[in-house]
Image (cartoon, rainbow, N blue to C red; front, side, top):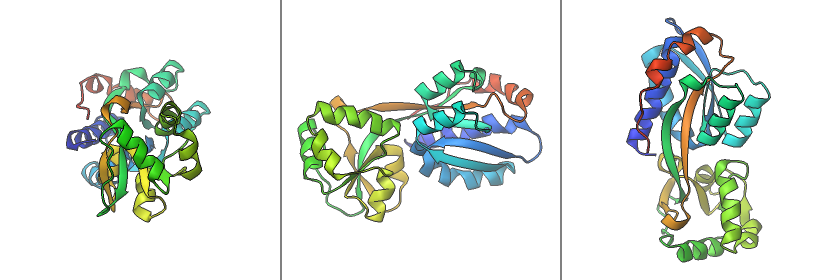
Amino acid sequence: MNSNAAKAAALALILLSAPITARAAELTLLISNAVKTVMEDLVPRFETATGHKLAITYGSTNPMKVRIEKGEAFDLTLLGDDAINDLIKQGKLVGSTRAGIARSSLGIAIRQGAVKPDVATTDAFKRTLVNAKSIGYLDDGLTGTYLKVLFQRLSIGDNIKAKHHSVRGAEAVASGEVELGITQISEILYQKGTELAGPLPPEIQNYTNFSAAISAGAKQPGAARSSSNILRRPMPCA
């Protein structure tokens, strides 16, 4: 996610939450891990500028979707597009408030200052992973779902399984828990102590679009609905 996407995320939060109340409010947000590091940078500035307080829970898109389906209370969510679309169909989210936030791709995280491995081609990517001592990515998120299929297609599934840790890739690399992390590039770029070794090669890259929408059970649905016209304006994506 580039600086435009970060600005889009901040703008989306302002547009989605500001109409809810004229006074300061505490808003409950369920947010994808893919934008966690961006949000951690933006939240203090947003709270100072608006007076609102944001109570944020981060997690992978798939488990977050399940929590919403089970009836968890919240005001706003920001997840992968497929989950957002399905939740709108289920009536869990207000479709008219849906706003595109960012488009993110997968990359390889390494410790800051480490020698960058070759991941420029699919063959080089395979060699780098096979030779790695440990690899971190979350099993239950959009990344893990995609990688499981990809590794089987590349015939390295068993090799990866033996050294895989189900952790947030960028954070685990920064802490020294794993040698390589595979995650959204947006996480790698904002994680202290890590560097981007490179994106996945174009022929095996996976792009994920993220959107935000207001809960159908938001505390002030009337005010939330009043923001729908503003939210229809297009936002830049990375």
